Structures are given as structure tokens and as C-alpha cells.
Image (cartoon, rainbow, N blue to C red; front, side, top):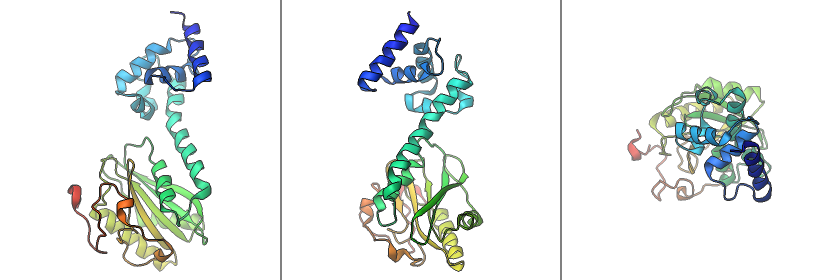
Length: 260
């Protein structure tokens, strides 16, 4: 097979049509040509998809796992693992100009970008200034596919470091259920009380699972107002697709989906 000619035909096709009509293995093959200019990337693309099961799983694999596939060295592995973080950054940069607490849809969309391609639980804090502008977003903790732990002092330290006066918490549930657990509610209220005692406010805690989201503020799961009157309440059916169309009592913790 004329590898050089095949590679140029792939690139020319992309230049003319984008990735429209490309099969997953062809898109991966094209990507690999930029890291491996003199190698049969067609065979490598097929080998990677066989090894990890899908195109998306290849992009989400670690560099260490990718280099276990014969023919994939550090250079090619680094290029592959760069793709999802670049997509994350792209989506975040698009949302930032209109990001604010007054638009829950954009806020939830921004939170979803934090977990693109992530298959373990992570815990973020969004640091806000006095005008409720986003100062920074910090990853505080990373756990397993089913749990993550965070200490209130981590939230406080990050807010102080950024000279922030308010916060939105955000974490993900890779398992598929967007419902918060008892521990999620307990730690959120503990963080809220500590922040209030220091003159800072917790405005919301958003749980993300795939395309679904759950707002503690909308379900009134925060212990007190905490400045949340600044935020418009929205009916939860617009926030979490797998929830019943009702508002939870303030101190009720939902036990659906096996959560406690």
C-alpha cells in the first residue's frame, strides 16, 4: 500500500470536506499521520479501536495505556490525549463571555464541559467576585468512578487564594444518576455554613451526569438563603431530565435511583 499517497488523500479529503463522511477509524488514522509521518496509521487506528472498544474510548485513554499498543509511542500518545482537553477548553471559552449566575442554562453547560471525557468523579469550585463574575475554576479533588471526597478547608483556601466572595460547587456522577447522595448534601451544607461564617456565600452546587444536571439551589437543598435570592428559582424539570416534576421539600433528600 502506498502509505504516503493514502495519507495525502486523507488530508486532502479533510481539507475539502472536514470530517464529514469520515468513519471513526479514518478520523483517528488522520490524526495519527501528524505524529507518525512514515507509518501505516490505518492499521494502528484499527488496532487502537480494537484495544479500547471505540473511538471515544481511545481519546479518553491514558498515555500509559495507549503506549501499550504496539506502534504507539510517547509522541502519538501525547497527541491523542491532547484532543479531549482541547475540546474542553474550546467549549469553556465559548461559554465564558455570557457566563453568569443569572443564566442557569449557561452555568450548567459550563459545568458539563469540565467533565467531558472524564470517567471518575471530580470536585470543582467556581470562584466568584463581588459582582458574581467568574474569577477562576479549580479542581479540588479527583476520586473513583463512584465517589470523590473533598474537605471544606480546600474550598475555603481556594476562595481566599483567589480573593473570591462567593462560590458554586460542581461535581460529577459518571454512574449515570444525577441525584445527590446523603453525603453530597451533608458536605454541601457544611461548606455553606463555614463560608457564611466567613462572610462568603455558596450560591449553588451542581451535579453533572452526562447531559443531565441537578441544582441544589433549584431543589432548595441548601440550608438557608445564603444569598441565593440573587438567583432565579427554576422548576427542576428543566434542570434534571431523570427527576420527577416536583420540588423537593427543603430538608428532604431524594432516595431515587438507589441513592441514600
